Image 1 (cartoon, one colour):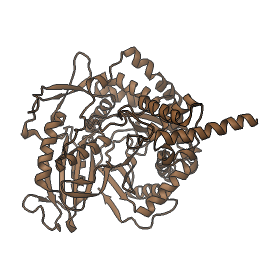
Image 2 (image 1 turned 120 degrees about the horizontal axis):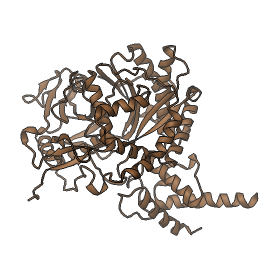
Image 3 (image 1 turned 135 degrees about the vertical axis):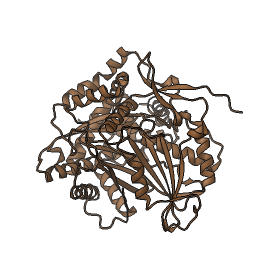
Image 4 (image 1 turned 60 degrees about the vertical axis):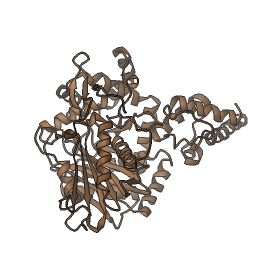
Length: 91
Length: 464
């Protein structure tokens, strides 16, 4: 798993290439809602995250704070991936 | 000096062609043309000179507003024939009105109209005949009692969708301010228009066909019935207070999430319709509902014109409709499944294939698939209304909402948009599809399901 900074950059590129194609170049601290993130785009993003990182955040994670920027999303994903790995190790 | 423009043709998009077919059905059956409306309420009337100049400049910049429909006889796809120059006599009209008790800011240039509702009613029902209105858009400005104002855009669904009207108003506002800005694109650039081979479209549409075959066995009904029938268009819009809106938003978040809460409102709309079916003794009626989803490229400021919409098809069985929670959960699961399968893309491909079919056989084919119906009811949640639209020609925007026009079938629709921190709930229906008692019952049920109990006072209601 890449470190959080790298993950944030990866997510920025993933979102720019697949979800917010007209937003221009996204950076780790770009405001995704200002860039056009809406409910359809969020759903597409969740599916991309699941396909690329094997994590589907639960509904309680779908908050503005967690999706404001690629860096915020990276922080959330890192947390969920760590939990998943710990749960796997404990089994 | 701006470069000389040549005339051009703009092919209709997939959803445009469906709406063209729907418009034809509506006009043939005496329902009138498919003209919807959007209302922007203001703290005062806008400056008319500024607005007129901005409107003229807007139409000159986007001449699709004076285009005529034709057909490309090589591809058989309908198209807009856009002139190179805009004849000033053909610019869609901007008309000033005043309510009888208005202070008089527009005196001398405004005709008197009884009320905002009366003005909306006249434009929403452009006549029962087969003829289309002369213009694709009508702009009306109203000076209201108490010194307030309103701008009403009555727009043909052949050339605009709800989001497009919001973009139109935002662009118009910028022109009023005289801001130097990059104008929003009017239409998709040629490179972005649908252009895959028929084989590719057929392949891409397969996922939708499979999904449709799974759900079309459901015997569903609409309150208006499957026969296209004439009936005056009516709308009721309630703008809820901040406190009530906050309660509703909280309930939506608790049952869905903060970011994807539209299934909650959809569920409440479905249950409100179920209430009326049960009132009529039609118990345990499943619902098959079409929901529009935006296909505009995300992150940009347009394009303004044409219908950039795909459709997702949802099914609700009687057991799903038992509670708000069960209906919401079912819709959420279906939404996630359809997005995983990219059914929005698949349906767009299907719509694209059907562009070549002339309107009458198009609608015949569609309604044959749906046993005469189109959907159990119409619903959409268009989100915040043009968040960047805060001013219009010197007046401050105090509220904004859509008055969606619908057809029979299905005869009814429930819709949501937001303005600031307030929710606007709209109900549309055709006369003859539901009684006055049923209207009140449906709207009350819709609001109560959203709010978790009756809303005691509705202070801002528009009844058209």
